[in-house]
Image 1 (cartoon, helix red, strand yellow):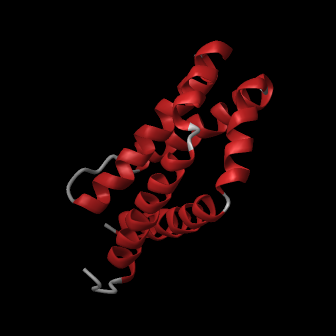
Image 2: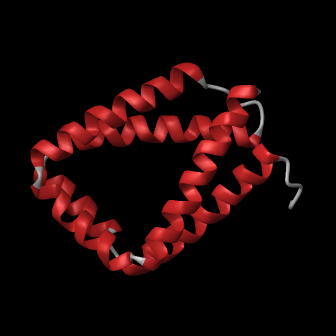
Length: 131
């Protein structure tokens, strides 16, 4: 449970900060995501780092006993799968995938979901009793 609380604090802060940044700097993120498929070396190294972090998270926290614990575990699995996608999909497939997700409306909804999940994790981990 202590690890779940620590990871809830870390991921809660991350999700709130990234969600707010994505909401207010959509154009900046869209540009970065749009150029990402053309950067093979960067994509591969980001994939390696994400894979290591995801596997670390899976091995240390594969706990589905509560919603916050399950959410942290799900983030680890998603990180690992996304890393495998970055390292193994072709340039054409990555460009197609980016074309599907790199839409302003998806950034708005994604940022709102990110902030809400982050606030939930922060509420859980700091015992704020907002919910």
